[in-house]
Image 1 (tube, rainbow, N blue to C red):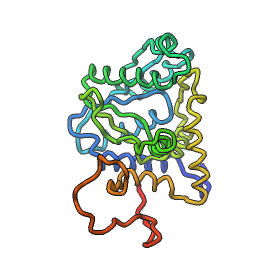
Image 2 (cartoon, rainbow, N blue to C red):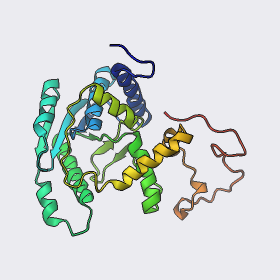
Image 3 (cartoon, rainbow, N blue to C red):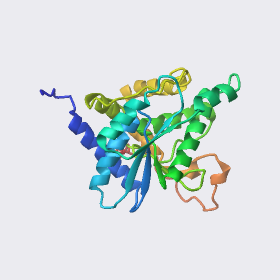
Image 4 (cartoon, helix red, strand yellow):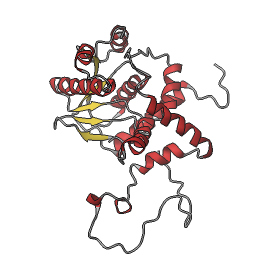
Length: 281
């Protein structure tokens, strides 16, 4: 195969993503000796890529841990669970396919004008937690990547008035399962390129409102693309901001401290100093 100068091969993409996932797992202490990790596999590019990278990490890691793929079928017409199961079986991956009546429940219970996505997400997340516990898994891996974190940060600031995104590793509301997001440093563009080059059997979720209810997130994607033309490192800079928080320079009274302020903290990119070039990852 002839590779053009600017073309990144499948192997190069894989190695880059593997490195970034390994760094994230180490930075946030996501996986320890003896962990049993349920890997949420929806049939999308993100979850397939996460599973493949975690399998590789398991083979190379100095600690021993288990993986089991977990698919939740919400009952949407046309959702090809057979394709997903075939992929998992062919790889020899331990897995559990879980059929549900979520679609029927949403149709029955959803109030007119209320969000389709929010109730669907709650039902699916609740099922993931309960089945993970049933399987004896103490960790649940979700396929949110770098761009999901950034877009969620912007969505909350623009539309909710809240300064938050997602956590790379946190104890879930059930008080038992720790949710981890190993793709936090991995760019969506790399996942898209890899899934195409590797011919991953991507399956549509077949949600009847998919693509309509997510217009605000698409607006954030388009905004970032425009800003990126003038600020090439904007995505990594925004991601870094999530781990470089200065509570004293925010307005939330709950963050106030009695410690006297002797001097202001330096602000990356501030006109009074040199621009910060230490951009993650």
